[in-house]
Amino acid sequence: MTPAPIRVLLADDEPMIRAGLRAVLTTDPGIEIVAEAGDGREAVELVRRHRPDVAVLDIRMPGTDGIAAAAEIRRSGLATGVLMLTTFGEDDYILRALSGGANGFLIKSGEPEELLAGVHAVAAGAAYLSPKVAARVVAHLAATGAGGPADRRAGAREQVAALTARERDVLTLIAAGLSNGRIARRLGVVEGTVKAHVSSILGRLGVANRAAAAVLAHEAGLTLGANCAGGPRE
Image (cartoon, rainbow, N blue to C red; front, side, top):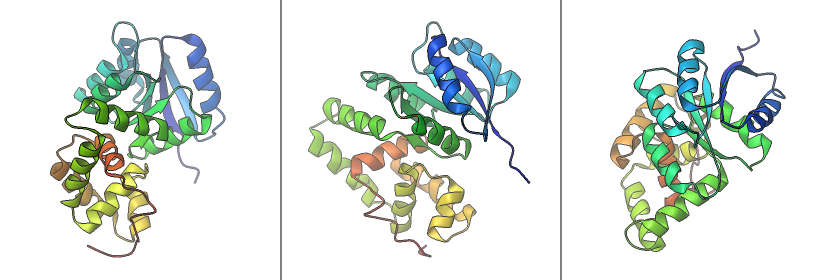
């Protein structure tokens, strides 16, 4: 049986940007665009009406911006995942959106493949940070946080070191944009075990969501090459 398409809402105040996003997304037969909005308020209303799987929101729009719209979607208890579109120089907005419930972030000038990958990841319940966004956020945190970059990295590594070995494996795969199902297959465990690990990771790191956990993983330098040997290890 063919799986149901991922239902997507687009929100950007620039019609040409929306047209470009639409053109990219319609190349994937597994994605269906169900609505488009010109601002955050309209986006929230259309999310309530259409219940899409993913809302792709410009982070800055007149009136109600993407951050406020994402927070409203979360407060409404809707299952729609939020993928934010940002540009260089909007690092403060990204940090606000991380705490507001966004599931993923893309740079508008990124490759079309990143948009498709981001939509699929968020639809599957994963966090998605494009490499450029991750690098920008980590650099911004290093520049504005307490201490220098080395202090930030050391602090992140200390937090990650407090996790179990398996939790570090799971965190690394969260940072790589994998869903719970894909993490379970990668590590050879059941999905329920992964869900329990994710809940523990978020609590022990003191972060609100998978996207924030992914940022901390990038700060700590976790990579797939350095972790995740796979196989049962509870």
